Image 1 (cartoon, rainbow, N blue to C red):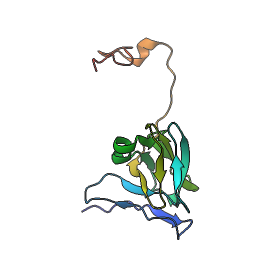
Image 2 (image 1 turned 45 degrees about the vertical axis):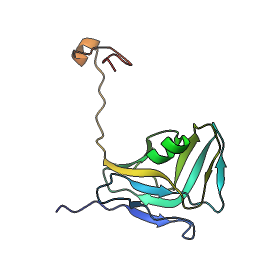
Image 3 (image 1 turned 60 degrees about the horizontal axis):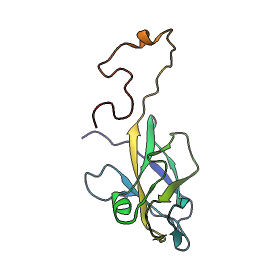
Image 4 (image 1 turned 90 degrees about the vertical axis):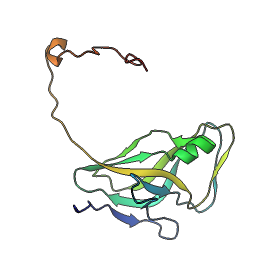
Amino acid sequence: MPTRPTLRIHLLRPSLAVLPRYASERAAGLDLSAALEEPLTLGPGERVAVPTGLAIALPPGHEGQVRPRSGLARKHGVTVANAPGTIDEDYRGEVEVLLINLGRGAHVINPGDRIAQLVVAEVTQVAVATVGSAEELGSTGRGSGGFGSTGS
């Protein structure tokens, strides 16, 4: 079995922070939890950066994708406002989750609540090159069709 890359974590506030973990054996995302001293009420339409109490060092060549938890979105309308949020490999500050309440009622986030998931993924950086004409981009069956142009 290949060796897994290592996500190094520093607990900034050990009494509040919860070490991320996979909820099941084959889960893609690690659960991120709220490192709060007291409950936080998120009203309808409000957004807030919720601290996790974690600073991380991603494996070389990887990014962290902060994604919503489907249960929070389905049951309460609470989701990640910039989903997926990207944590760059060289970021060393506290991981925060930008939540927004799209529901009709207020939602209370309690200390230690699971608020998002972190998916660690490989990154490919590309070289950027300009071309002189649209024809040099090459043609495709879709062409310049935008939103909804593939029939869905």
